[in-house]
Image 1: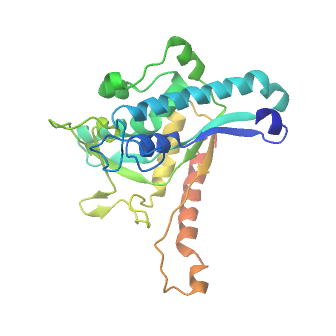
Image 2: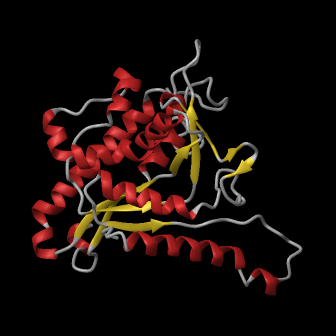
Image 3: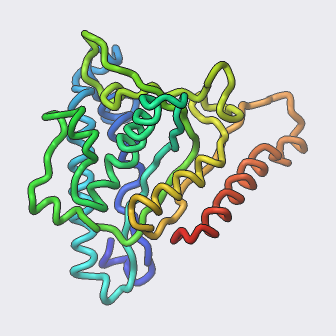
Length: 274
């Protein structure tokens, strides 16, 4: 691809949402290759929800870094392009003012965004992941750590929603799984009140402030990398009784993007490299 299209393509993305592929494909079994622990989902014939997501992610990180190195060594000087990766992440805010909720919130962002961005920016996984996942989390050799560290020119960010995060201590008999390893209870509702308007997807709550908070977190924790917004959007429930003329006005989606663009403008004014 670099050889054939590099004269025209100036921004390369190695992977889009590796988190989604690893979690839905290897922990929940709802996406290809449909693997998970037998107790996780009845129609998974094989898999390990507490180990395979981390293995798949590890190899995607290494594959990204190898592709980035190849591009930089062989093509970048002549083609003058840039290479990066697109990561999806929710934002998380504490469910309560308790210390346990605050700490759980930090774990939640580290297990979603930090899982991939810490290795790419610093050469290793977040300490919380190494502590809680233990030997189920692959280790980078010194050579691999050097390969993955700073292996991007830009980061693509896909943002859709924000969750509250509360502490979820492990109970006896709870099986190992990516979803429980962070020991965080994630929800879009607090005291019966949604964090924002709910879209058609049950997991998607409209919360533009989370967009800004996520981007400012990137700036502060990861030395203000160049960021491209590669996905953002909302779905609506299908209302078959709505006249076509009314449906085409698309008021809800227009308002959604207006609010999120306003959040982006505020972030740009904070000197984010967006």
